[in-house]
Image 1 (spheres, helix red, strand yellow):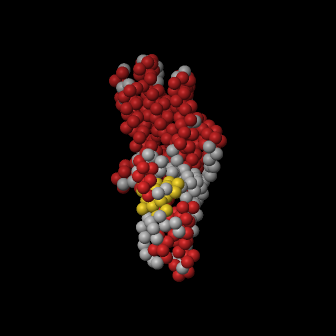
Image 2 (cartoon, rainbow, N blue to C red):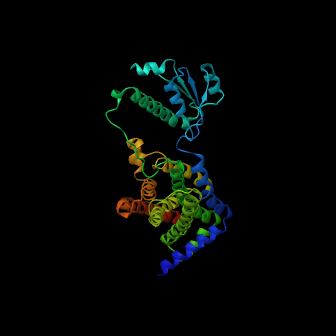
Image 3 (cartoon, rainbow, N blue to C red):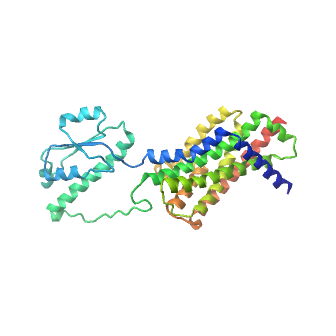
Length: 374
């Protein structure tokens, strides 16, 4: 009973200490509001209003169909330019794409030849260039195929591909970006709060005060875990309701309460990792450098930015022991696809197992660091 009371009182002490840290409160508010909004709306994962110009040297019905196939929101209305204006326009940054339709293009297509269309891409705009290349190929191929079918009944394809886009029919990048940025903010804040709380006590000399009290390292550490975890759970839930669902109008398919429980389980791992880093670092600058090394791989390689299936097998195996990988999978299954506990229980068990290992390592390091101060 005394142990639980000590853990509760120490946790309240941590909450009061955080309440007096104005800068940290400002960072928390920014990360779960403005940052989520800016990342979700400012860095689209799909093509949006890409500038394109078309050199139409054929001036045929087919080339006109291709020109009219490019329209908002993926592209702005294409400019029809002459061939000699291609290089100056791209050098000036006016166009990301310039499509050159050669002369006699329609005649060659109807004759069964394979005429080529030149696509010039400004690769300095790497995101638009990579995605837009595939968009333009699909648009041109689609227009040519439908044109051929109109003039040749025998050219009908043996199969017809009907695409059905699930969970995000309009491929709205805001739906994906907002939730994944919320996950990244949860990861960053949970590690920062617990690690900074430990280092702050060391720098302020309050650790020595705790050592003269009848407290164990387990009680001190668990108090930091539950108090900082509670802050993250509350602020993340409010951010989900007010920013993601409210301001950005992102539909949530699954149970919000199941996701909140998943946050709590995940925080057992991430807060333990924060304390582990806090025992390794001797000052806040060192802790900041450690965060750069830890946070970037956790956020970029966990599946929230790039699908894990696209990564090398070695990277997938390494990241399988990272808690963020399983939390991202859990969040996507619940919030995007409406999964219930019967589908995500493996991720819950894995997070508990990884959290137990991190907690044991952090507790061992914490005991050694406290014994060295005594």
